[in-house]
Length: 447
Image: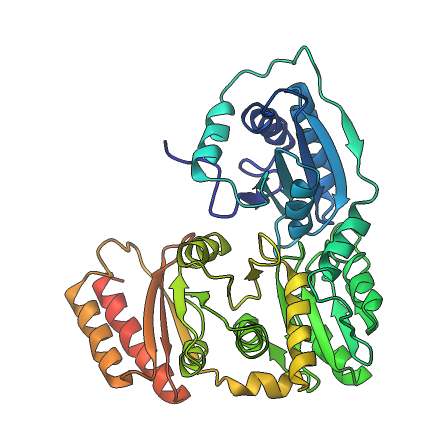
């Protein structure tokens, strides 16, 4: 069955356009209730709903709630909560599923839906296909309607969960932090977590109004945070995205520390202080310097396709507990079931404490290689990657880079583009080689 609605990260789009409408959410709630609301051994089924701070979340929450209740499912309303909190609370309340209303790092005009299974993981493709099939069913009102209740202690439960991801007695006493919550779902949670662990905390991006989520703030726009860290003389800055599953740092010099550098810091810490790191999963876009730094420390590394779903699949296949993306979506599978910005930030801070070194020194143990990307727009991408001129150009560049760089050609998932990326030790050479391949790709595509 062809998937019409679900992408690799749930359902997402502009509000009021395509499927992102209240009418669709009503039908989706009913379909999800029919497919997911199956309680083993009888008894009432329950599904939790959480959301980020964008204004359309209230509308979609009500529509999903109505659809689920009409299907005979009880609904637990969590209110604004980070995406990983919904994954955790779904397990805690033994719910059949959790639903997140969020478009992550996108602007407020967008919204979307993400599902978590009873175990707090992404739904299998087969279950998503069952939900899509159930969308075609006529809606009928169950003879035994569900009920809704608001979970008032959700925030406190999740705060304690985050703190419990660190060892007993762990303290951030003496560390000054600036947090940027992106006017998103962590605005009322992250400051409490770090304060309760003893840090001196100041915060920006903690005044959501429904339309300012991710607006010139958060992990996708860290300039305000960089400025605040320097002005306040803080030790570190920490930026989250709108739904709280990504994190980036700013060091005391105001320099951005990305997901590859944070993963490297966590991996080093595990190797030196926690009995070893058996492997790390990155993506096709992970910096080659990250791979080389892990290789030097004899830590295995594997690449997955871009997307946390694929990272987690590869982690499970390899039996590894650590993986993530340069965007800051980091998964510590021995602490939680999905990417969690707050939990990941605490793992980095734990490394800083145990190494007793500032982050700007720790990240210096890994040399980031210059990376240059060119988006080549084509009338048609058919056969371009297999074209003999393209494969020959790639082979030539790979030979020139030897083992100290790499080439990646990747079709865009949403646009008629082929992304040409080259990494190497010399920035000028990398830029020239990327342009060289891009020219061949353009010719092969008949542009």
